[in-house]
Image (cartoon, rainbow, N blue to C red; front, side, top):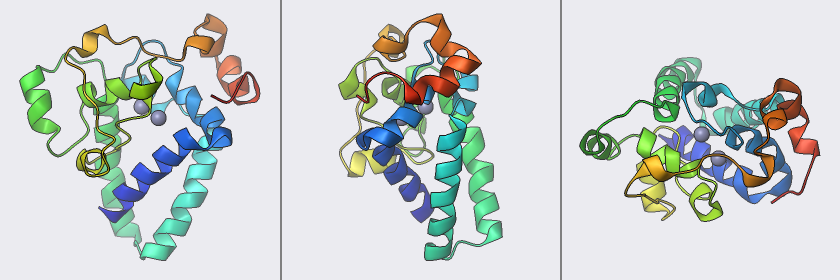
Length: 171
Ligand SMILES: [Zn+2]
Ligand SMILES: [Zn+2]
């Protein structure tokens, strides 16, 4: 749980600190959110995140087995909340008492900045409620995904995604 709170803080830092946002926005430019969005991260963000994680593992004293257990929970949950399955709202609401659900994370991928800067949770949904960054939308089907300045096809090709952090403005 401590590690999942770290993931919340790290994700939030990625939105607040402009150099980190340049890398993290590659995850946000996807105009059609689905399970593949869950693995769409810039390699530099993955490397930096892994480095920071090693420090937290040592600091908190998280062992290999605990790390493995977290990974086994983390990956199915992030693939699930990025997926485009039409989960009925009442089931989404029940599940998001504990975990981050598709409707909760879809708000995070909205083109509207206020919505993008909310719902930072990875596995557990309660961090956002506790720190007051939780946001919901009545109908998530009306959300437009992506970042307006990077909507063109070239930004969604491999080369465009790899070069994206070095182009355009920070925010
Ligand atoms: Zn984000
Ligand atoms: Zn996401």
